[in-house]
Length: 274
Image (cartoon, rainbow, N blue to C red; front, side, top):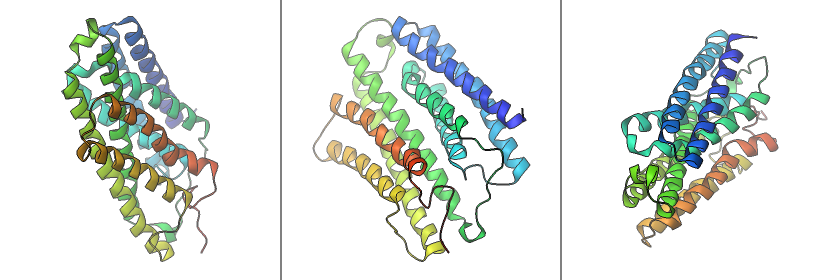
């Protein structure tokens, strides 16, 4: 087995252990399992980094061209955001009960899509905008994934008391943290859309082409725009927005990876007619 695949599947395995630790930690109300889950995620993040770096160095091709690479890179950035937040705000230990299962499932799915030969992006499509586009997308996804986790923490603390739930921040703090991550994700996802428009204009001569991924990206971006509008204008708080963040995560996953996989589009391997 090539080193990049070995590192990749080690990362998947560690993310799976982390996901199980968080789930059983919630079920058993065991704080030690959250700590174990956190360090399991860190243990998976290191080989994940090696997997991406090894493929990049061996091929010299940007590590996000194929769907499997896009999934891997997106989860990599998401886990990075999650780890940074967890090691700086220790009171939200159960946060991984949402983040890690999503990361594990998507990485496992991405592993089934891996192809041996890396795909080089066509010369006509090469542009500096691609980096802004991809980083904006990955960072935005990571932010809204964490915000969904905050929503789950809010709902759990509101419903249960004592034990691990007493160690969570106050409901208002969780609500504000979720809002901040949504706002950050909304900005980064907007950056992804804008940079994608400039990129499309360079290669196709038009800023918007109604590509299915473009449409779904706009829908998911507006979904979080509605979240912000409901909070800022209508004063929504708490449980309503917690549920909203969890449900909206599904729309983001569909637009980010589901549509390119199911429909032949410009984003499916970056194909384009010249």
